[in-house]
Amino acid sequence: MLKICCSVLLLLSLLSLQLKANPGLKVRISQKGLEYAKEVGLEILKQKMAKEQFPNLNGHEKYGLGNVKYNISRIRVTAVEFPSASISLLPGTGIKLVIANASLTIDMNWSLRTWMFKDTGRSTGYISKVFVTAIFSTPLDHTGRTLISLTSCRTTPGDIDIKLIGKSGFLHNFFIKYLKKPIHRSLATNSCPNIRSGIQLIDEDLRSLNVPIPIDDLAEIDYSLNSLPAVSQPYIDLDLKGIVYPGGNYSAPSFEAAPFTVPDQSDSMLYLAFSEYFFQTSSFAYYTAGAFNITIAEETCSYFNISTEIFGSIIPEVSQYSVTPYPVMLKLMATETPIISLQQDSFTLEILGSMEVFAVLPDSSTQSLFTMSIAANTSIAVNIFDQKLMGSLCLNRLQYSLTRSNVGFFEISLLENILSYILQTEVIPSANAKLSKGFPLPNLANVTLTRPHITIAEGYLLISTDIHYKH
Image (cartoon, rainbow, N blue to C red):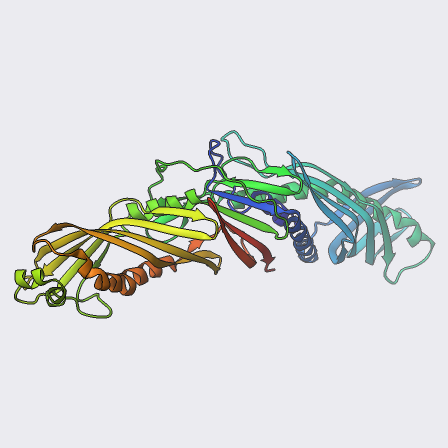
């Protein structure tokens, strides 16, 4: 329970604090999400308590005629009930967890010794009316990183009823109360320290995630915290850096993120709003890594062998320049960072580039025939698969012009059909193969997104989703 509640508060990789810049990713956790986390957490707590090994309790208690020495061992929880539990947001503070009227049943070995009485046996204990109140927050440490902190914790143990198995009589009934006292005291004094110890382990676990997430060999994503979580009613809002870097190069991009606002919705457990800035940094990262450059040659062309003969049949100047047919090689490259645009129900990528056409001579050297500039407008369809945001390109519009020619001037419009065919059959499929690897979404271990819905609005892409925790 603690891991779920605290992890929800930090969500995955809420780690290093940055200066207050506009985020590339906004995360919103709704009350519905917190309620689900509570239910999952309580179930995890039940399972953990059933497996836990508790230390022996031994000591002595005073009574009128002397001391009662006791030893309680092999304590095992056989049943746990949480009939009433609530989780709520404390604006500006954190999360408040209240467990009321909890009960648990335990089995244990016991032994009692006094100057007048000595016995051992097995017993069943029923502890009821247990109340736990805990408040979690995320302050900063001396390095400026967020911590998971147990701000306050209070446990009220409630009532304890012990039944000795196979034992009865006045003396047994009289001395039962001396078994109740150490159990009551242990529950009251150890619950909150155990909670604090568990939180420290969770904190260490989350801090280990303070590394960029690789997308592929070319780029990595930084999902670290951009500012402290904002706790209000009825949400927790988290601003994450949401920056894609070229692999191993963590220099900040020259452009800045624009502010945007997540719409006021609460039907889903979790909302992930990726800004246009996030996708623009990914475009910059892949442009820097040369991912928008592609070479098409005879040995790599999937659908037909391109040659000077084919181009010569369309452009007479090529056939006059190269009488002998040679294989042709096309080099396409982006000449500046492709521009991402998010508008209502529209996700587009504008690529400005060039294409140079070469004849490949028998000695494997190349001879440039002509170069043209290209402006391609594409639409991106997005979906979610295997906890990744995936996309595919579709060519909307293609513009081109002749910038340099070694075969003389010709009407570039003559190449419209063949260029469109090459882009549709070679370039776009190659780009989609790269996009099919997807962008890993920020996520907790064992948590999967269920029924995610994608909405594209002006300036951001919103994923509205429920979550499922796999035990």
